[in-house]
Image (tube, rainbow, N blue to C red; front, side, top):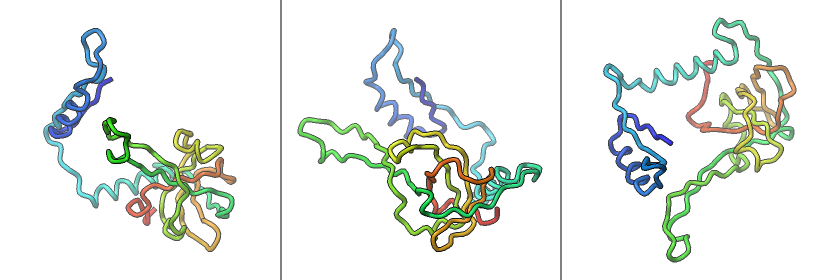
Length: 183
């Protein structure tokens, strides 16, 4: 396996140290960390430009690049869908048994969305084809929907396909910074 680190000497050093004791196969490390310099002329994009480009890609997803798609507006009852979030959890070294070392493992946990649904207005949600909440983490994503309006017990969604939704699980990402108001 190869890990490519782009323009970050600190991250390269940390990863190289972490994988230094990795087993070798025929004298070659099983995990190799390779530093890559940033190409000349590359500049960091401004946050405003990144938000604009992200909103443009979302608009293209629903309406098409040539605006030849016609998305559907679907009213979905909150009892018909399950809003979920993926959270990360790390085990601190004080919680480990005596003599065990911490490997800084990160576990992903799927939980029900606990915030009020009104916070999801203008947020992008992933439609996940899972049979239970335990399957959400590894289940395929069917597509995306945009929450255009939040009513008392329902969500108004912009969908690329006609109703009904192909799955009941809607994955909520970082809804605080991923709003697409001008779509």
